[in-house]
Image (cartoon, rainbow, N blue to C red):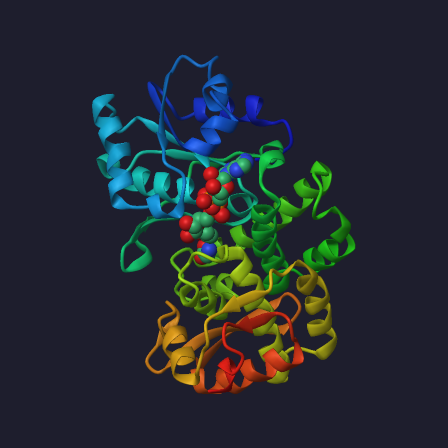
Length: 362
Ligand code: NAD
Ligand code: GLY
């Protein structure tokens, strides 16, 4: 359910159709401070006990240790298999709460009330839930579909501009990979990106969710098609890993990665030049220029091969045949991507820079 001003009507309706006794709202300190008692108020008319657990804010808390706090609270409340969880926060809270719901008492129902644009267009839809392990992001998780997702757009009013843009890249991604009309709609509405015109956001979030839902319905467990949702993630993950996960938001890294993936697709002759220019024109003004440590071909290959999509000596690279038409380019070797990466740096100066100027020459 997507809209501005729908939370108070929609949330009790969907939660009330499932919950019988106890609801546990899982949120973080930031969201709880901005929206104190917001979910509790929305559910106040239902004959339910609504409790809240407030977790610390940050990706570094998306761990088993934090999850334990949710379980501790559930046990203290004498929760049972009928208990319903509500995730109230961004992707971190959504992923963690979803995993709690997948595992507590072997599975309880849960709902998502995503509060970031990224969570609304991406993470709250599709049922991937997880926490991080110290050696791997999202390493411990489960597929668990929420019973419902209530996207209150007005919650985005407090979202910092940088976080909004990070989510916007994932939204644009859905247009690029599967829906040229969505891409055209975004092109035509660029001036609304920075504002809070809820009519625009409602249309954009809805169309983006339709793309993601259709892909997940066709391939929930990522046997094949779902991997196209990782468009831009090969170079994106490289940027995140190489900068220690601290400098750039995931969406920002994916934004740069998408431009590179489009550039490579154009070079391979799969993506028409005109489509590449449209993608470039939409993405480039939104990008946060990346600045990262020096990189040689070996390090480039090693970082790419740590990508989840790597198999054997090569990658399953998500490429484009046209706007709205992504495909998996099997057996793409890092050695094939390295010279393209060099050409990308030259042809699109200002997108990626290095701490040492000789960097990319390896
Ligand atoms: P996040 O949850 O860390 O939220 C970003 C920041 O915004 C946080 O500081 C948060 O407290 C704050 N915030 C949240 N809502 C706010 C609001 N309305 N106003 C002001 N501040 C607000 O990050 P995210 O970008 O939402 O999600 C990233 C996470 O999502 C990652 O852990 C990633 O692995 C995961 N993810 C999962 C999927 C999936 O399919 N399950 C897909 C993409 C990303
Ligand atoms: N965010 C990628 C996926 O849901 O598959």
